[in-house]
Length: 119
Ligand SMILES: [Zn+2]
Image (cartoon, rainbow, N blue to C red; front, side, top):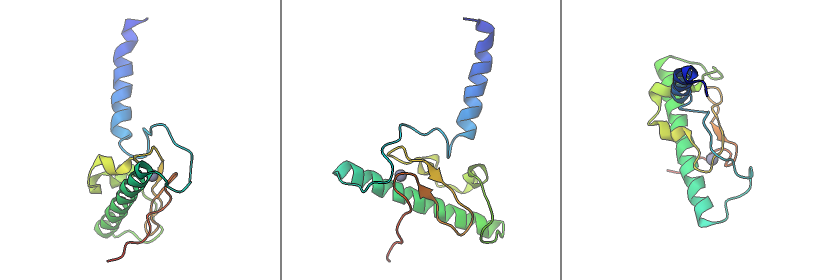
């Protein structure tokens, strides 16, 4: 193997890690959109919905801060500063999150949208 290429590989990996904190870097996806049945699946779904609610709250904070209107398109990179932690952008079951514009709740490719919470 050509040793001279290694630093470039490391640099590329570092950039991917930084840029891919959210949205990318998904793990093995499970079968899409079927109801949670086992206790583990229900836990994953609950954790996923918690993440989606947290992302939605971050989107609202961002919209307020920058006075964004409904329908304004944002990306993970912009939202990063408002996220509770990098963990909330990873579905525990390996689903892919779709951020959606301001005013539209984020969704998961496996668990869909978090249902509205009763208070
Ligand atoms: Zn999910």
